[in-house]
Image (cartoon, rainbow, N blue to C red; front, side, top):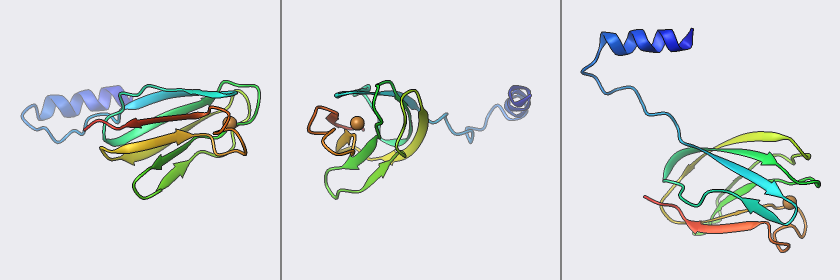
Length: 115
Ligand SMILES: [Cu+2]
């Protein structure tokens, strides 16, 4: 039903470009000792669909390196998923599991968000 409603709106105003693009989403898989995620993340509002694919509890934290501002999921049990909506800027970020010793054990990914 939602699809039908959107189609009607588009047909009624083809010249307008007010419809915002869908928020890009990225799949993140937390493992025991590593994090699997794409590194081609673009600046703006994004959604990280975070799944704990390990056998231990994990958590996913997005931290901007310049000022340490951060957003994180709750503690996820094995198999649990949480979607995290974050607005990121084009600069250095660190993505890691903040549970004790997990980051030191390899659960960290660092890269520069693309413009
Ligand atoms: Cu962890």
